[in-house]
Image 1: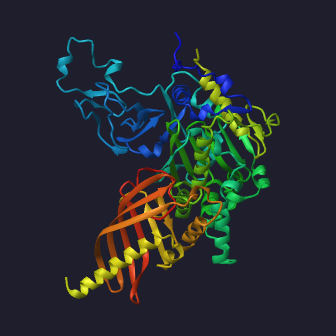
Image 2: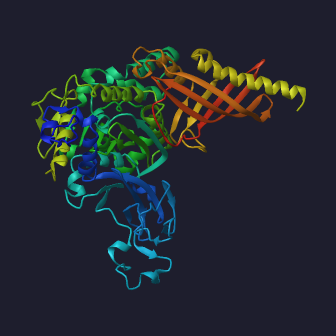
Image 3: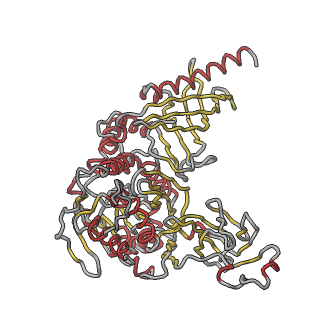
Length: 441
Length: 161
């Protein structure tokens, strides 16, 4: 018998869809690919959960997601941070309905089961009803389940929903130095998340965003309307007066091709990477003498010179997070659907640094990361047009050939290319393919 | 309320309506000239955000940044603004909360529809205007627009609430 409609599920051929120098358009448009990504990339890789400073005191919690699954980061009375599934052990209701708070215990809103903040069972109403049944206090199913693996690197909490895979240290090794550099920029050697969060909804696939962070061939094209405008308005309004921080922040987005080329790209295993290093679009911000003095007092001039000599643009912890150490901000990727993604923007205070540093980081987020910002809407527009354009059957492939085969191997999994290379994309898809292939039939 | 108070209330209301009209008619330079030299526009990111400097905002703009945003509106390279969105602002529940010499604090509620590329978006919330009485009119020292969902996730929006 023949049917007019073919409803058979086509298998997702990862090897074919993600080739070394091009990827298939369905990676961005096919809901089945998105569903498989959630399972194989997002629920396998280490995912950024939050920062320890969000749960500074015992009893504090912060609710978030890993891929599609609700989790809570807590601080228990033992002083430790835990990452638990946000699900009651009894009938599965979310234990925490809001984003953050401080409690003595986690109490389910449905049947009143109570748990400690490490997930262990505290009490059940009329508990004797379970006597002689298969349920017993002390068994694993009586507690809130911990996520299979979680760990902290210098205050940054990551978790993996897979019990197997590289440990956090190995997974992070290529880009841990970017976290180090951000933390080292604090005279007291510690960061604190502060100043709230911005949530920016993008009507596009999550990969457009994470690719764009180290796409150094787009700023001088996409950001003309903000960066060139800021330069000309500042010149007209201020003449030769020094430009305020806002103008220093917006102007460099239209630096030349050679500037971005020299920033360079660094790629590592698991899809991680960063651009910049010796210089970046953040390198020419005005000095804050009080801050430099506090740093020198804390570390000595030689070490401070070393810390400030590292000036990176975006560091990607593939697939979920990206930081800017030089301006102490972080963006977190939350995929919602194949064509919908929320980007959270967080700000860090450098402990021991003067107030001006935090104010500059806040200003940066307002100007670049808010949904009403002056720069990002044109990025978002480019992603949106890709999302629509790739719906066409005009051609199947997204091209990533630039400088293919011309990467420089620096050893230990560290690969370098000039800024205009497509290295960052190829490297992300190398990891994507690895995650997507594991466990494939 | 005395006849004088009513007349004053009417003037304040007319000023707010005129401000909204300039936005809807895209007369940006005229709108910007309503602000004092040190006047700011502020769209906070939390409902009771006390501080625009140590907490992120959707927008916090002095004259220079408003000049940049408005100049960008006209840039042929502002791809996300093509075609340019149209807006309709409605203002109601106007109350003069403080009148102290030539200084005023006025609260109101607003609804703004933004229409961009086949898609209407709806924003609503409260305004708080800090006004300075000047000659027969007012200048804006601060316009604060607090969306009811200011702490939620938002799609791109470049125009002023």
